[in-house]
Image (cartoon, rainbow, N blue to C red; front, side):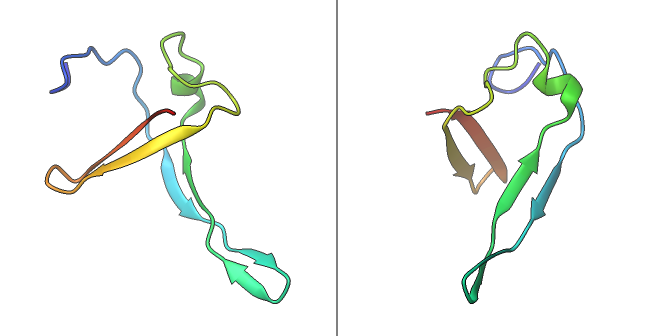
Length: 69
C-alpha cells in the first residue's frame, strides 16, 4: 500500500536520463524517464503511448508525480 491509499500492482526499476539534442548550432537538454516494460504493459497502467502528462514535484517528500493531463 502506498501513502496515497492505492495498492501497488506492478513495480519495477526505471531510469532518468538526459539525451542532449542538437538543433542548429545549439544543444538542448532532453530528459526522459524510462518505465519498465512490465509496468507499462500492466492493465492498470494509466497512460497510453502519446498521452500528454502533467508532472508535479513534491519537494518535501522528494517525490515526482506524473499523471495524464
